[in-house]
Image (cartoon, rainbow, N blue to C red; front, side, top):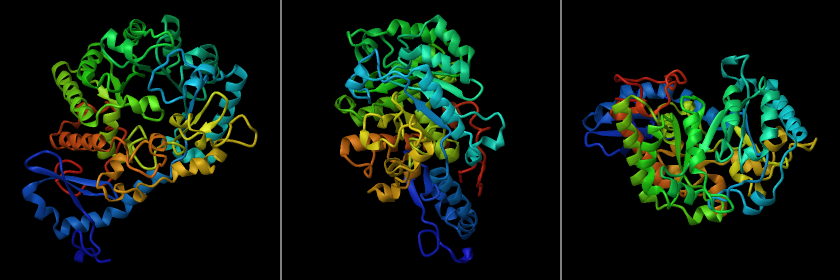
Length: 474
C-alpha cells in the first residue's frame, strides 16, 4: 500500500469518525480500531485530513493495532479475588451474591486458604507468566484481594494468610467496615494492605437505610470512624454504589469524602447481577446528571483546596482514552479483565472469571482445591473462554461504535443475568458514553490531571505524536 495515495474514509485510507463532545469549536477525530484520537478545532478539519497526516498515521497504525491486540488478548492473570467466606453480616438488597449463599455459605479454614495461596503463587509466578512482570522487576508480586460477602467474618484466617504470605503477594481487602476496629486497622496498615470501604451516603440516615445488616441496622458511625482512622493512608479507597436511593446525593458524597481527605473513591452504578440490583437501578439520565455534577464538584474542591479526590471509575475511563494500556481497571474494555487479568475464587474453591459471576453457576470453570484443576485449566474452560473471547466487534451496535475500546460494553455477568446473553450492549450504554464525552472535554481544556491519580504520567508513555503541542491533540 502506498501511503502517499491514501485518503481518509476511502480505499486504503484510515476510517476516521468525528465525535461531538459538547464544545462549539472543537470535535474529536477517532480511528476506532486502534483507539487513536485527536482533538481538533472545527476549522482545522481539512488540514487534519491532509495527505501528510494520513501518511504519518498509517506509518504507525500497525504498532497501535499490535498494542491494542495485546491489551485485549495477550495478558495473563496477575491477581486473584478470593472470598474467604460466602457469608455476610449485612443484607444489602443489591448484593451480587445470592441471599442463601450469604446466609448459609462456607468459610475457609487456614489450611484451605494456605493451600490455595501456595497453588496460586506457583502458577502466577511461573516462567510463562513473567512477561506480565512489569519491566522484569524481580520484586514483582501477584495480588490477592479478599472480597465478599464480608471477608472480616473470616478475619482470623485472612490475617493469618497476610502474615504468612506477605513476602509472596500484595494484599487488598474490600469490607463493609462494620467489623473494622483499631486493632484490625493497625494490622492491615502495618502490612501495607489495600483497604476498600463501602459507604453509600454522606448522612447517617440514608447510609444506614441503604446498607444494613440482617436486623436492619446500619454501621455508619463505625464506617466514619474507620475513614477518620485511615486518613492519610495511601492504599485506601471508598466505594459508593449508585442506586435510586442515593443518585441525587452524589455531590454531597463527594463533599463529605473530600472533607475527610479521602484520596480515592468510586461512584459505581449498581450491578444488576441479581434481581435486587436490577430493581433498585437508578434512571440513566439522572445518573448522568448527578455523576457529572459530582465530577464538577470534585474539580471545584481540588482547585479551591489543592486536595485531589480521584473518582477512580471515571479516572479509569479517562486513562483508557489518554493511554489505553495505562488503565488500572479492566471493566471498560472488551474482553473485560475476567479470566484475562484476574480470576475469582469462592469460599469452596470454585473458580469464576470474576466475583460478579460467583452467583451464576453457568460460569463455574473449575475448583482450585481439586488436584486436576488450576488457574491454567480454568482459563481454558469453555465457560471462562466465553468471557475471554467476548468480542465487541460481534455486538450490535457496538461493533460500529467509534468509542468501543473506551467502553467495552460492560459487564458480561450483569448482561448474562439481565438479558441471558453476553453479546449485547451495556445496560449503562448512554451513561458510559457521556462519561467519555466529559473526559474528552477535560482533555480539550487541559484539565485531565485534576481527575487522575498522581503517578499516571510515570505509568504511561507516548506511542504516537503527529502534530500539535499535546499528544493526541491537533
